[in-house]
Length: 319
Image 1 (cartoon, one colour):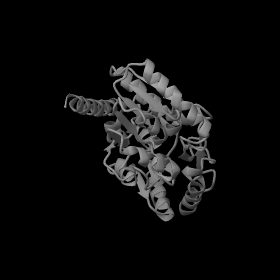
Image 2 (cartoon, helix red, strand yellow; image 1 turned 135 degrees about the vertical axis):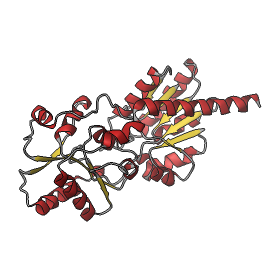
Image 3 (spheres, one colour; image 1 turned 180 degrees about the horizontal axis):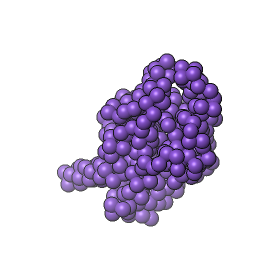
Image 4 (cartoon, helix red, strand yellow; image 1 turned 60 degrees about the vertical axis):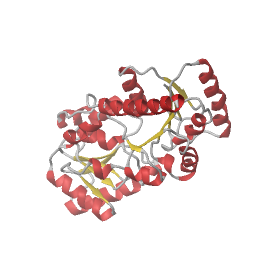
């Protein structure tokens, strides 16, 4: 399979590793240019970089022997559909169904043989049928551990409550100002000081260390304006870390049977949910609920989509 991608995000690399473990030969081509800016997968690149990608794809198709093209993120779709020999699977990540990226995605979607999205919200924004397929998580890496030990390893006071905002405050789409307001109002409600309830942010942390921060925290606070299927929520669930989140992507579905945790549609509701989580002083049952999106299961579903697309393509050729 030939995979086209704008940026080799951690979850994409894990997807490729999963497929290769399951016996799929994969080649990955990445759009050249700058790294992503502010989390938007297509940002940091201009027209020149995207024009450079076209001959690179064409050359690979001429020299390689592929059964299918898997385009990852909507801005790679034009390079997949402008060849007419191989079937195309398109995987959308979230921000590629809105704005300029969304316009490109929708213009190309009709030519794709199968599309996967992270949530029903994304499918509605896309405006056509698609498989709902969240990205998977590594249940061996993200697992519960002793909280006090985790606090010691990251340098946090275990006698304080720690609310984790797992991004840089400068990451605009994640809406740090809202997280700060919610935490401040939660302190007021609980009559706590800044030292007693701390809002912690992390960025540039190696992925293998993220589970330690999640196990050291008392709650994960997600205040994003929009998401597809945020891996941070599922990773927190795998660590049994309670989650408080805005109603974005598939978060409400993921947290449906998870307690303590909650989803808020307003700032007031987010405060209510965070107060309830911190007052509970308990871990969640998230790990049980998140097993269905382990990478092993997600990998099997991707293989099922491949087989369906290839079978349909063979039928058309035979016909």
